[in-house]
Image 1 (tube, helix red, strand yellow):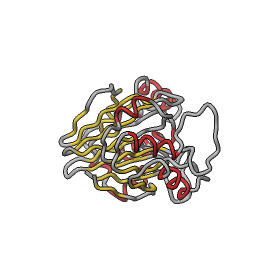
Image 2: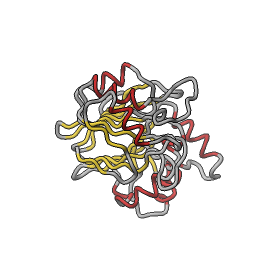
Image 3: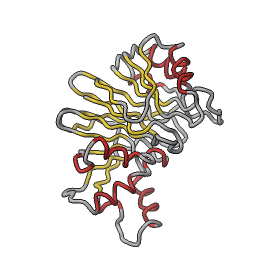
Image 4: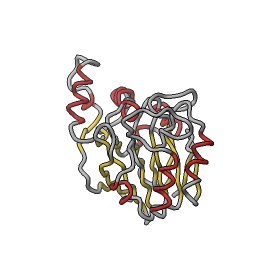
Length: 249
């Protein structure tokens, strides 16, 4: 499978980069994980949005889901035949209904384009790709994602601090796509609900991860310093995520 980074900025899109969005592709399936600010525009450089098979949202912070609004309008006024399956955390459908009430007098808003489903911590299969959400620890309900295809595994951290569930799901994975919002000289806000780059490296090293990809950078972070901090703890390859980067897994 291929992983394409559609955006790697945290909190807000920066010049030339969107917020969190990650396209996972096999020969026959296209799955989008997170859809933050600017992601939907860049997605269309890679694939036709009508070719998406599903969307998973890790948590309900705008830098991870807000471009669902743009996607909804695009699908509403395109030739998309069926509603797209969009998987969201528990209680997120109610949240989206509250949001949509301020966006449109037409009800329902999102359901015209999406089949919204609140996911559990179970495995979901889409042809040859499977995805299993798992709880992580953040300021809101947040889920990492474990993606499998042909005996290869990708784990996406979502937004989180170090936690046992993340460490458990990382064991022997091929690629760890990790947030590192506190790395590279980023400002530290308490309580701490994100990862330092060095912590991402430590998690990768202790879990025998093959490759570490850093993402979700603070706007002022020094990305090369993030790499150095992660490499101080991880003996494997550390990749600095950037918009448009594709990694074959």
